[in-house]
Image 1 (spheres, rainbow, N blue to C red):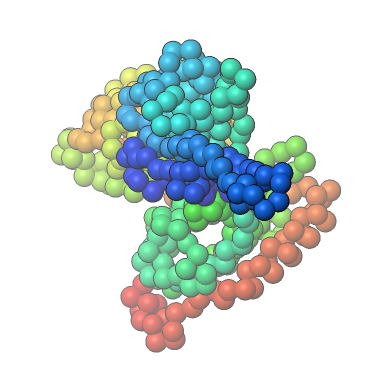
Image 2: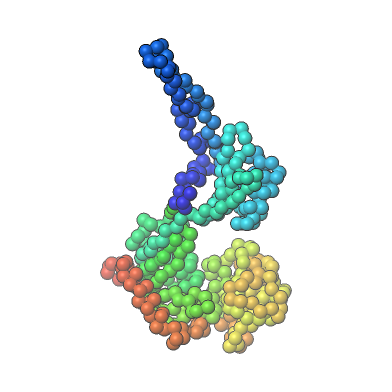
Length: 442
């Protein structure tokens, strides 16, 4: 069976309920003609001249049937196979065959299987959808089970979108090929733009204004059901408070993908702006009323409201200089970075690193809690330069190295092609009257 036939052969539309369906067609209402023999007498004109027809008929074998079953919560693949009539030897063989493709223990609830075979008999064929992208076909042949893997066919397209911001990036008014978006797909692109592309240049919780806009070109791999398997930005343009940022992805030979502006300057900073992806509940201040001490005192850090247990990430690579309980900070991690910079992460419920360990940027170092002088679960984050707390929202964070001269020619070729994709959709702007009102409101 060709890859394009997979959906037809493995058609599941029963929400995981077991059901049976005929696989073959019954020919001649269940009767097959084995043969027709004409017998003529040897002497002409006798009664035997009339041909005698003998019809021998045998019933056709009943067509095979199929049963669909779904792996339930807490159920193992072996249990599902046994429930569908396979004995212990067959279950073992099938499990080992599946193991060549995927660890059976890693199969999640919701995996669908199709069992086929003669009525009232052990299945002789099993289709198992081990992932959204692949099927394992198991067939009984020559007293053993054989397997083949079939991949869901993919199509590639390019999506062109633009957005005009009223209050935030997530609720932007979209234009372009909006009808091609799957449910929740745009939100994934927003998080990617905010966290991985422009997160070092723009504070999306504070810097976004009404009238800001963006446009993107995205290459996607899509499955036959319309879901997206993989996607990547080809180019992004963001207009924010009179500034225009461009982002072009480029991978150095043997390196990782990074985003650069049109001149080859890195967008990534050596520091992330956010240790957690949650809103700021209390900003850096020299006079803040403390809710527990009932006095005004400096709040030389940034508080992020987040549920207890939320992972906390290091904003830059460095060495852990403190990991434990420290007074009003509660459970706290301190990391020393280059250029005399340190960061602190306080009120943690748990710590995942040890003093002296080296951590990478975005590595999880602990989880949000409410230890120390804290009234509720949140993260207190501090940014220190030469031992003095500074406001990470306003300080100029150091950037990663620009693209080396030896790669600029290749980069410019990719850049020009990518920016040409953006020309297929216009960068939106507010109408003149609305733009004036926005300026007055700011």
